[in-house]
Amino acid sequence: MLLPSYLVSNFALPKVEAGFITGVFIVIATLIRPIGGLLADKFNPYFLLILVFSLLGIASVVVAVASQFIVFVVAIMVISLCSGIGNGVVFKLVPLLAKEQIGTANGIVAATGSFGGFFPPLIIAFIVSMFNSHSLGFAFFTVLALVCLSIIIVNYKRFQTLIVEEGA
Image 1: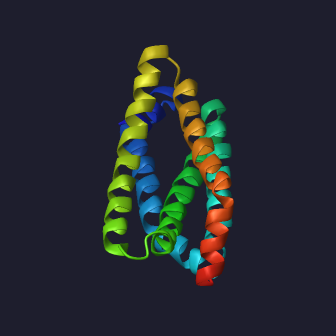
Image 2: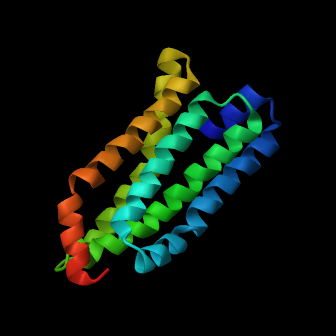
Image 3: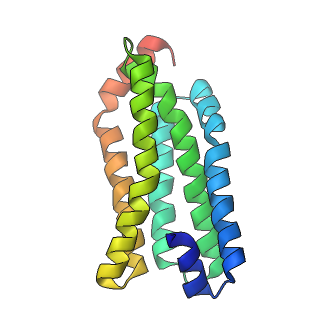
């Protein structure tokens, strides 16, 4: 459990408080997903993903360098919000990208999302153990956000064509 351990070791938080903050992070990321879908119904999902991944990148940089507790907590809550909103937005794009196999595609996206919640913390923990630096571990998340942002930007024409065709 990367986040609660980090909160205990770096900010001397009692374990119960660290667990509570971690729980709030998870609940926010989960409950905000429908809002991401709602936003994607009202606004261009392509631009929403650009916003989500940009904010994820910025917030993860803040997490990597934050020495003040409140700054760190605000940044991880921004990450939580963006993760949940991004999840809802992605499900708006599935029918545009896989018109003939929406159910299969949604299943694959959901499974991939589950891995997305599982592997980054493991990789961050591995980086921390290898280099004894939480900042480097959190910087990995920044790189991950930038890779996702780059994929979205590189596929601009494809996404815009699909969005215009569907009137999304």
